[in-house]
Length: 292
Image 1: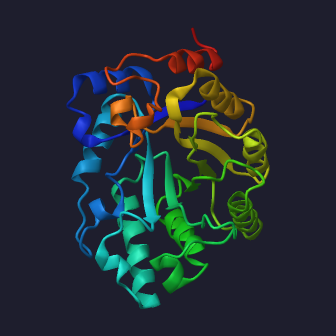
Image 2 (image 1 turned 180 degrees about the vertical axis):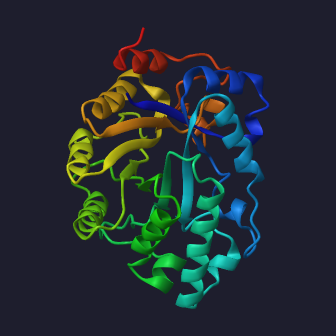
């Protein structure tokens, strides 16, 4: 009952080895970069959806669902957005970006990463500095989620971040407090994405605790960008089993298909090698999922 997806780059869809594995193995797609702000709205009010449309079209033709990634993020942001200093202007720009992009894909996206990586890595458990944080303050995340709900009420709305897998970390607790607050006040949030970029050892021992603790707040949880340095079968099996053990863990996405497609290609972190051959980790994941 869970999906198993991957990140896709539109420029690789013409590679037959790549697209053959994609369509044989995965039933959820996240665009790697094509829905990010620098691609979709490079200059104010001028939208470019062609690269993302290619991926959505491929998914539609092959019975795959889509995760939208990502609407509001401090990175891969055009300079014209980063240079805004007036709150009213930036709020209007942010809301227009969310509304325009979500409206374009309305009815084709299963879940959106509405806000990505808004929390700091400094042990404070607080938001990181960004143009959105610095100009709009803490409320920008809530604003983004409310705008998203109004635009496409049928899409699941997710908060997505990395290094929030270990339950005791301040960053994890900061996101947890936000989700708990949102649920208590009726701010629309349906899911939390755990990027799950792990080292050779795989997930922390508390990962299942983290997933179940968030799920208990009334949100779905998902592994959204899974990759593991050197792709140990045991580490992959543990990550998948941690999801299977939590009822509201609704799916897993690995961040790329072959090691050569990975942003961490030097660490060989994926389920297929550079030639597109299944690695031992592939068999470990399949077995954990109950396949053969």
